Amino acid sequence: MQNSLTFPNLLDDAALLSLEHQLHLEEVLGDHSWHVDLQRQHFEFTGDRTITCTGLHLLGSAAPGPGTWLWAWANQSGFPPAVAAMSARLRDFGRQYGIQELASPEVPFSALPGSPEEPHLVAALLTEAAKAVTGHWTSYNGDAGGGTRAAFLVEHPGFRLPPPEPARVMRVIQQAIMGLTLTDHRRALHSYAVKRGLGAEFGADQARLTGPGFEAVADFDVYGRVAGIRATMSSPQGS
Image (cartoon, rainbow, N blue to C red; front, side, top):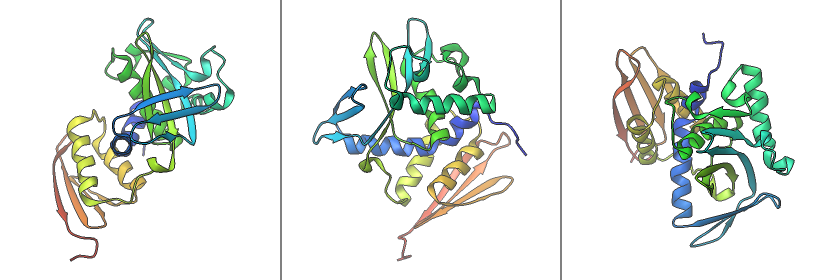
């Protein structure tokens, strides 16, 4: 039984549910622009309609010059405490579990999995870990000037996911397996199933996920990676 927690564990725990939330966010926003006023604690999207976020949390920023991520709690720019409070919560979690990526005020790009060089990729990694810890699943990262990317967790009733729908769940699973860098496929699938309220049965070579109107069976190879997935779909009423 695993008695430690690592940064890659957090990335796996967040991967699929985060992906589904970001796909949903894209659909809600469409073509849009954004504006944030940290002093007023105001974050707004404008497009076909205006969405004023009901919650705003600045996590930090990834700057290409120093090649580092700087957590909001460690930034000397004088943000309102409430804006940076979530990042401080992550710092405390990192200290508790010995996860230096969360506990250190500044994190070199090279210290992260895959040694990403692009600020938006760095921001994405730290944001994914933050989601797994905080349970806030919708994020946005944007250009803060000079190539720096600022990462936020944002809240609004319209960002909440609808109930699981067969085609949508399968799209998320397949897109994650094919497009995301997962350290532990089993962990990632199990985390998604539990957080999404799906049935989950895991054996030595297979995982069976079930929900309203669908059943998916994933086969694992000798390395524990998903080698194939088969799905059966029907209406929730079985018609």
